Image (cartoon, rainbow, N blue to C red):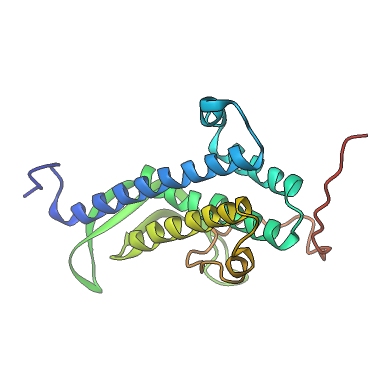
Amino acid sequence: MTDPDFGLPPVLVPVALGIGALCYQWATLEQIICDSLVWMAKIRSKSFSRAIVRCTDFRDQLSALKLSAVANIDDDKCIDALISEIDYIDNTLRVRRNRYVHDSWFLGTVKSEPGIQVFRSSYAMTIKRPQARQRRELTWDMRHEKPGDLAILVEEVRAHADYIRLIILSLGKRRVGLKRLLSKPPQRRILRPQSETPNLWGSVPREPRRHRRSSPA
């Protein structure tokens, strides 16, 4: 039996709805980043400003927004907040979003739960080490998709996109409410994907971040 509108098994219909909501929220996020960059970088090309920014890759827009923040904001706490949000979007939310959009989907069963369950896979293999001093293992990247997983990602995209929007709005209104905003950032419920590749340089203490604007000599 399949859904009459989309030809999907009924168990996949909520997943399809969730992916649609994710795509909608991600498009909203991309527009917020575009508008923020137009304002922050002072791109003044009348009605063509957005079109000019959209000629660049989304990750390039994120990098440009960070550069523009350091160049044009004199509040280090605000710069830190924006850079932290942009890094979370780029390194965590974007990666998870891509997997939901591009992974393959399967139906199957698991012993611990009744009925047909939903799985997704990137058709890639991952390297895992079960315990210390044991050999690494190659395993297929097959994930059991549980109810609520997609909803959490959709809400994370919405919340962090809106946080950036509110910071930019506050900066445009002579920083009205900015201090309160910076004191209450949205929580982060998704962990950044871990890399198997170790840091070849070891652990090096980092100096405190300092944002300085300088002009080329």
